Image (cartoon, rainbow, N blue to C red; front, side):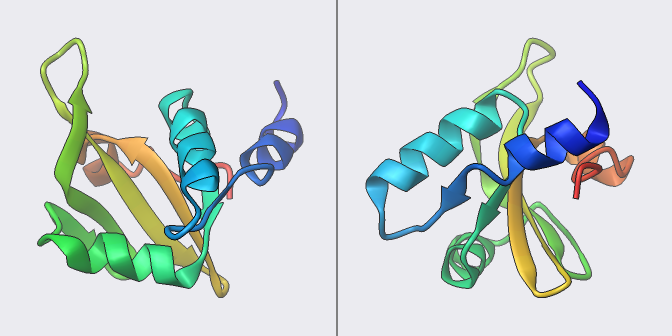
Amino acid sequence: MNLLTHKKRAMSHFIDYHDSEKWKDGLEAMRNGETVEMCSESYWHFLNSVPPMRQQGSAFVNGEPYYHNSNDEAVCLCGIEKNGKYYAQMGTVKQFDNRELFKTI
């Protein structure tokens, strides 16, 4: 899959914290490795709900893991604001620290 195709797929899902169907759809997409756009209210909810494990500028790793991967690393919702839009992706602290997340936006 080329980068343009991946960007189009990433933007086909949208997280709205108050819409459970969109949230379920976005969560499933993130579990499949996609980056998902979200509304600003969702971004701020996830940033402020619990202290982040990591934060750098507008990017953060939510402090509550969704699951653990095969290496027993916590996999969390990670968020970022870029150019006035907000995005989420599942990732580990190691991936965040190594700048491996949000490469498709």
